[in-house]
Image (cartoon, rainbow over all chains, first blue to last red; front, side, top):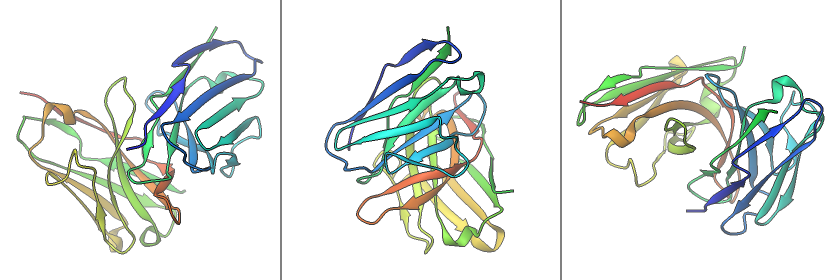
Length: 107
Length: 121
């Protein structure tokens, strides 16, 4: 199985900050990468697929980049509703696998 | 509203069984591959099973032979029959809608809120 490693595991940021989360794959996955946001007690929400394509309705403050083994999720101008845990997921091969998550907390 | 509502979780003893359900609404359920993904408390996400729009099931080795995924398109419903449950199966189980990718597997564009399964004596 392809291993997905996110960094950092958690970060503290202030409202208005720009944050970047990194996701690395144990082998090349082209651009078959998705990002999700999860808040406590809520359903995960799909943000991005194909490494950089926003799901419908997702604000453009979220952006994704990368290909191969190295990917990033950037959130511009962090707002209170953005404090959550973010996960990456590869779908290049079977089975689909996830990163361990990055918790974005309020500083 | 496009949504998935999962249910059926609870406390079960090791070796016991449980059946999870997922009710879909707001989209053409029969057109989509559907999945179960679980999350151990405080840990990451693990894909548990999938069923294609045509009914073909898929499982990881960790649950193969113990879990059975099924669907009932007429009722817009997805199920997961879990047998021979172990403590390690304790998790929140999410129903998810999958988007299949040619040459790859799936990403998930719609999720339920999850149902908690606790396996303990």
